[in-house]
Image (cartoon, rainbow, N blue to C red; front, side, top):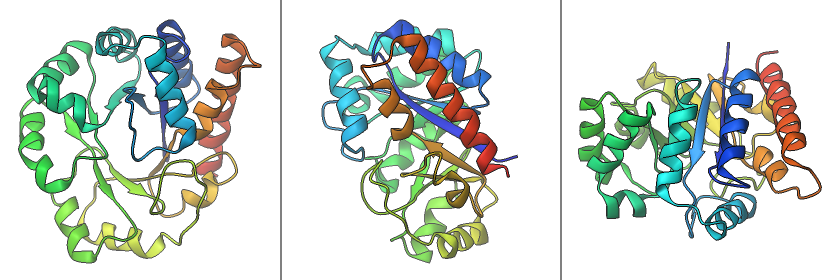
Length: 246
């Protein structure tokens, strides 16, 4: 069974909605939840997730909101915090590790933290029984892939193309998937541009997919009320989970 990872932006449109949406995603078959930490300059994200980030910040998002929501969510679904390095740097990784343990969160996705800088933090997280997810891009050499996956934890985030999330580009990933699997048995999940139309194709040769923009587009649809958004996103998650496992 291939896994589905779902990203949602914490605090948009509200913190209560985030909790309800997360629990509904778990019921819809999502295996792991990425709780996005709103940030003013989300460099790896496209305009959809960037817009949700900014709206959450305008609504008054604070880090303690992430921690409060996680305590309600993490007991029910495998949860990771996805955020950029700036808050981790300013607050200190010890602080986030402590909060993750208190919340029941299982690890972190920090897309702008390169391997070389991540190593000391990975050791800290491993000691705390938490994971830091590694990224691999189609542009990485075989030598670089081997270096990245040597100590990969939980799963490897394979970026489907060079660029930002949600842009819908396409590349042949089979050669790089083969290279990754030469060096590790850690599951490989593909992200960027995965939606209900592309999921079946993107899932070929990998162990799961990561979906963000397709869900966040619905979060941003102001013609829908909260319960309609939850119903729509849950149906989308079920459809994607079925397609990747056909």
